[in-house]
Length: 113
Image (tube, rainbow, N blue to C red; front, side):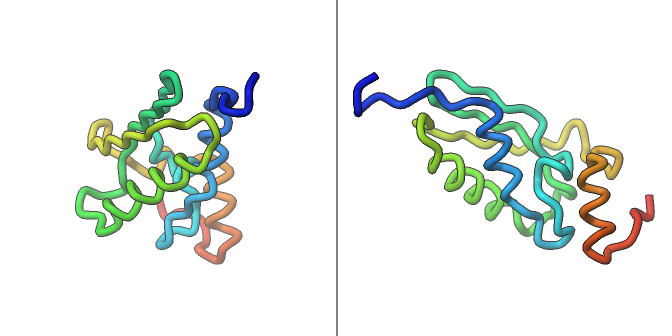
């Protein structure tokens, strides 16, 4: 491999980077919140299909920009496209067990759902 070549980015690297992005209201990363529905990688182009907890979320643009910025930092990523979808609708059952532990540990108590 020459200096100008980079290793292909992996799905694991993508998810690890996405786990660094925390929802400021809930204190849980967007992966463990269940907001990321799909990750596709095609020759360095990364496509993210995700949702938000509510349609009127004021952080819509902020999340998209944060994802684009974060993933573009990874070696091997040549572009990022983020698609926000509303189906299936997000619900609290989509939070992973780790996400629920994080919420409880942050003093947010157990989920009310």
